[in-house]
Image (cartoon, rainbow, N blue to C red):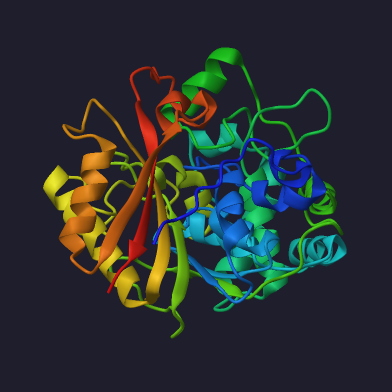
Length: 383
């Protein structure tokens, strides 16, 4: 069975224009991503209304939001708490006034019992702004179950937690920082000190209200069924007993192991440590190409068990040439063969090179030159 490949040269304005009200929710929190919204959106043009979509490495939920735009049900799994929190917001339906009202209520009635200490925090945030951030953090981490408004506000807060200083009204709560990842404390302090960049007061409620009106507008697509699960796709727990028709995903490239550390500040907001922590047992193994392929194969095997016969899987994948001795094509082919459950490759297509701004290495000022071109692998389940 051949898989129809749908290029995306002329996407509709709603999908291709990131500023369009229809897709603003997809950009609620800047975060390094493996593919643009146009990629899964175009693929799902051929999906039937009853088809179920799944992404075992859902990241910030791009596949899930594309499914929502198409009116399709979807599920996603990610082991990173930050990715999970952002992706969850892609499936909720709220009004801006609900988000602002919740924020106002939290700031009025929540007491922050613990503020992080140290030079980084003194430079990163104005003391009054940090106090409000800690109130919000305290609220979210004291609840055992979040409702739809909680989920929306939490993701919005993650999106404004750090970013560049603006010449007009502020769009982020922090002192000068990147918006896609959090720089490490020592580097940050040196940067601010040498430039004498003291933190400015930012009114948290005012910024939340403005952002909520921008993101949760009345042109967002209708809510569709689905769920985002914080789990490890090598075990695939927590997924309802339904069979998948489509799997659209992008697993971590071999050697890319710092997702959690790059998001350490957002991870702190979600209840994590107030410092950078490196060990991550939930992560796909990157010690060798062999262990990496074995772990990815576990995912393909688990996904097959939960997929319909003739289910379609599309994988976008790339590699870091300085680390990998094999091409992306070789790594994916061998991982699918290791899974030994019936995934048959139909087509492998060149996906081109991602925008340099979206390269993880480029975020750290390393040269993006020499990156191996990404591929799109189209497979069908024959079992």
